[in-house]
Structure formats: structure tokens, C-alpha cells
Length: 325
Image (cartoon, rainbow, N blue to C red; front, side, top):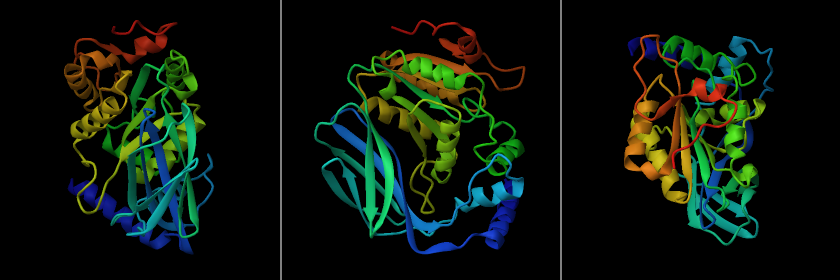
């Protein structure tokens, strides 16, 4: 841990030297993808001081990427600021908290199934977001881990993980072959594939949300709800290191909001996904349609828990494996 702290301290010093200036008088409003079961919606967002940006290019060098990625973690949050959310003819007024976050969890009038645009407004500044209203007839969902399941991050090798995270940009990150097509096949098992309940559950902090969303779009992953960690200086929000508690809480929240959906759970064996998913299956056996795990641990790896499948076998199959009843 001491080495990691020294590394981060050095990065912080570098950021202080190369940090771009703020845009005077401008705010940036981020709306994270929300979802609804047709009756109640959940939408979250954040408002911070806006900063000038640079275009992401595949040719960007490591210093450019490091500089850009580090800036995501240093924001002048807008505390106590009024934010109005607009969804069709509805409007809700919220107030940002001490770190600029705001959240709306409320019943809503009838909305057609599918994706809807949401707009946030505060003191003349605007932000755009999307809300997924899951059709009742879509009964097969998917919750997928990101690092080393869809995106090669090398989580088990910490120096490689840090290099992939900070020294590369979304155009340079390596995708796990075949995963975008596999997720599209899962979505297509629903009557309304374009509105399938797909969730990308990342253990990365919310400051990296835009880069992750960019990566998913560049690699043609189907539209879904991207969930990332809310890491706060006051110690609140999501747990920083306890992946079991974080992922379990998020999955249980999804299950509670979408009671008519059974979910495939995708992950890797680099950290705790097999154990987390086995626990979820034990608690909610009727809600888990299957568990597929990408093997990334060393050759002398542990066997998967009963009922879990090697993701390589699923990718090699010509059709989706038979799911649990």
C-alpha cells in the first residue's frame, strides 16, 4: 500500500503542474443512465465546475492520457445547487449535496417502454441523459462486470491495471473478443431487444464513467445502464475496496426494481465475481438464469462453483446455452 500511495502522490503532483484551467462561470452537469420498471424511476447525476477538454485519439501518447485521466478525479463540486430534471412534460427540482451529487428515485406517470431522453438544468447550464423503461415482456436481463470481463484491465497485476487505467484512453483499450456480439445475442432473446435490461456493473469510480461509456460505444456493445462507484471524500457512497458488498448491493437493487426479470450474471475469476454470484444465486435462485465466468487467474486456478460456466465455452457455442428454468 505504501508504494501505491507514493505512486498516487506523484500523479497528484503531476496533475497540479499540468491541470487545465476551468471554464470561467461554467458548470458541467452529468446525468448517469437511469432505469425504470414502468412505475418508478431512478436517475443520478452530478454537477461540477466545467473544464476544457481535448479530443480523444488513438494516437494519443501516455502523458496525454495520464493528464486527461487524472483530471477526472479533481473537481470543484457545486454544493447546494438547484437542479431541475425534465422528462417529457414532467419536472423535478433537486439540490446537489456536498460533493455535487443529486439523485431522483420517484414514481412517474406512464411512459412508453424503451429509452427516453432526460435533461438537467441548473443556472443556465444543461446536461443530457437517458432513461431505460424496461418493457414488461422483456424477461431476460444481463448484469455484467466490466474489468477483465468486457475490457482487458489485468486487475490481478496491479501495475498493469494502473497502466491500462491511466496511461490509455478509450480508443486504445483492448476489448475481450466476442463479448459485444454475445451481449447482443442475449438482448435478442427478448421480444424488445433494443430495450433489454442490460446492466454494466463496474467497480471503477464514477469519475471514470464517461471513459467507460465511450469504450462501450466504440466497441458496439448494446445500449445498457452503466453503474459505477460513487466514491466520496466524506466516506459515504459506495465501499472503495469491498467489492463483495458493493456488487451485492447493486445487484439486489436491480432485482428489487425489476421483479419480473431473470438475469444472466457475467464476470471473471480475477477477484470475487464467482463468490458474489454464487451468493446471489443462493439468496435468489429463481432470479438467476445462469452464471458465466471468464477465466483470467493463473493456470493453477480454483474450479468454478457448481452451476457456473466457463465463458470461453459460451463464446465458442453457436447458440446461447440452455438457461436455468
